[in-house]
Each structure stands twice: as structure tokens, then as C-alpha cells.
Image 1 (cartoon, rainbow, N blue to C red):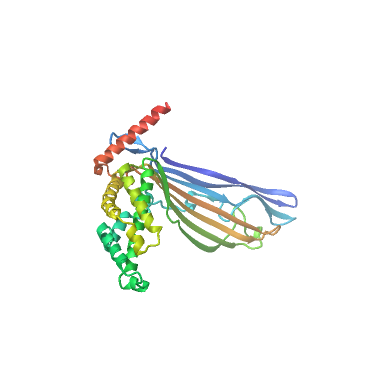
Image 2: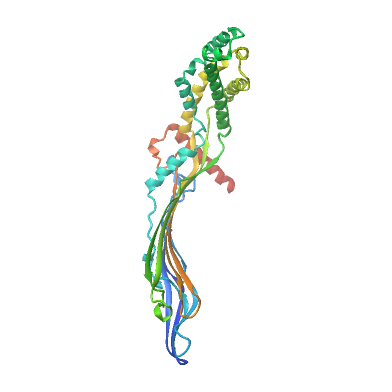
Length: 413
């Protein structure tokens, strides 16, 4: 339930006594406590499909804040003397006031919904399974920029191979390379073969993973900052010259601020690449691998003809990439997606080398921590997705997700 819970945590009770020559003249009890809060500011269980208003996913928005405290020493015994008039104390001891309100905790500020939605979109773009390891459109662009479309013409390759094969057998290798351009020509041929081989593997892996749930996670760099302040203070609930060799002590206050953000989601996508298309790609890849596995000479290059597979690949790959790009937008959905954040602000008080009048030196420390936890759920098509902008295909996919969810629930009953 959304709301705030304020409560008081008991840190123990201390007992002060004042005695004179065996007679007790005063007795005081010190109640040690700290006021703390827990807040649940937002909580819902899922997201609406946008088709029939049905809630699916079970992974919605969540925002909470919680205080935590640790530190101090319990059960310590201090005394001002061994005989005569003696003040003594037994109980917990802290490097700050022993009755503390919630204001001692640093507030901390969680990221806004807009900030997390933006980070979520970035994370999805970096881990979505429809994002190939290397970009086929970029490959094709590089081919065009380098003038390699000409290589994809079977007649051009055949003619060039015939030209080099017709040169005198005793043509020096240096002349072959630099006068007739054999070396750059072979470099281009190998570049084309490598691209063809890579494209088949990328698309094959892409197709084999279609219609299978794929879980991905992405973590952003942790943001952290630490500041330190040194001042003086006294122990509580008792202290000073009565019990210690010094009335005040160096007090170090360290404030640390850490923010962790990460994404986790499960993707599902379909593909327009059919079996006949895959068969053609496999054939292109086999031909390309023949090139990559051979030490190319004019004779070998001529024997690898016909070169129609190169032209066929170049013609087909453009259509394949266009189809994949279209489906990458509409055919990719998330069965769930979370952008999460933990923001922790901690304030630590510490005193070291405290020397009681009687007994060994001691150190004191305490930690006040405020922890914000936040989760932002995505729709099947991303964060802050506007239902009104959905395409017909996206609406159909949402409807099928709702039906699949209903079927799973029915099987459990």
C-alpha cells in the first residue's frame, strides 16, 4: 500500500550513577533511540495493452525510500574514578547525540521518470536482439563507397580474370601487382567474399533466434561521490573530562552518494526471412568461403567462374536488409522490460583513539543511510510509448500477447 511509515527504533538504555564512598546518591536512565521512515510512493503491477485495457506483464512502476542505521557501542562501562566520589555509566555510546530524529538522514533525490525512460530507451537500443553485431546496411554502403558494386557484376570479374590469365607467364610479380593492378583487385575480391560470408552468419543467427524469448541486461556506469568534513565533538549520552582524558574529540563526517542504474528485459521477435532465402544465402557463403580458402592466382580466379553468385548476392541482400529493418521496428516486442535504479546516500560519523580514564582506547562510528529504489516498467514497444502511435501490426502483436497470457493463466487453473 502506498504511504509513509514513521517509527522509532530503540538503540538501548544507558544507566548513570553517582556514588560517594559506597553510597548511591543519584541514578539516571538514558533512553537512546532514532526516528526513521519508510516510504512507498508508487506501486502498480503492470501495464495496459492499449488494445482492450487489459493489464499484462506484471512488472510495473515502483518507488520506495528506506532509512537504515548501524553503529555505536553497546554495553560499554565508563567511570570517573576508582574510589571516593565516582560517576559511572553503563550502556550504549555514540559519536553524536543519542536521541536522533529523521532529519539526521540525508534526503537523497531519485531520478525522474523522464530520466529513467530516456536511459531505458538507450539500454534497449544497445541490447535489442534485432541489432546485429555488425551492420549490413553499413557494409553495403562501404561497398558502394569503395566502388565494389562493379565487382558484383559477374561479367566484370570474369573479364578481369581472363585479362590476368592471358598475361605472359613470366610477367614479374611486381609488375603484375603495380602495373596491372592485380594486388588491389584481389584485395577487393577478398573484401567482397568476407562480407558475403559474414552476412550469411549474421542473418542465419538472427533467423534461428526468432520467436524465442531472449533475456538481455545492461548496466550503466555507477555514479558516486564522497565528501569528508573534520570537526570536533563529544560522545553521547555521556562524555567529556568526566570519563575521558579529553573533553572533545576529532569527529570525521563522511557523506557518500552512489547511484546505480540498470535495465533488464525479455525480447521476442519474428522474421520475414524464409527457407528459400536462407538457402540462397548459404550458397553465396559457400562460394565466398571457396575464395577465402584459396591462394588466389590468375588461374585459380579464372577457375572459380562463373561469378553469377556475386551478382545474385548483391541483388538479394538489399531486399533482405530492407525487410529486416522493417520488422526490427514493428516485429520486436518485450514480454517485460524494467529500468531500475538504486540511489544510496550514507552519512558516517567516526571518532578514533578515544582514551577513557580507565580502560583501553576505543573507536566509535555510526552510519545513517537513505536508500531509494525505483523501477520503471516498459510497454511491449518501449518506454513512454504512446498508444496512439501504434501501427496496425503492433496492435495485432499486442492482441496476440494478451491472448497468450490468458491461455497461460487458463492452463494454471
